[in-house]
Length: 124
Image (cartoon, rainbow, N blue to C red; front, side, top):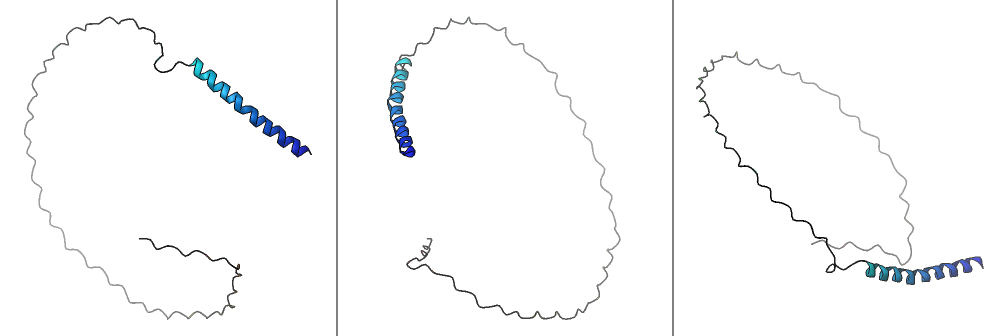
């Protein structure tokens, strides 16, 4: 009985929210002016400020840099590369074969009658 009373109370509470939200919306529409009716206060005209002319700046001409000749690189005679030593051949024993392990037969999956997995569609 208590759950029925609770359910009726919640339904009544829900239904009472509808007129309240409609009333709030109507009040909000009446109090906020529409975009065409917005009243903007007039701003005072700002005085135009004239700036003094920017002074011209005369820079001295760029000095020419002296041309520098680099000495040529001396030829370097390197000794011939030494030969790398050869590695000895290593004979490893053959790998032992792994023993064969026999597993028990795989159990069958229980099936649900009338249920089939859908086949995937071929992608283009």
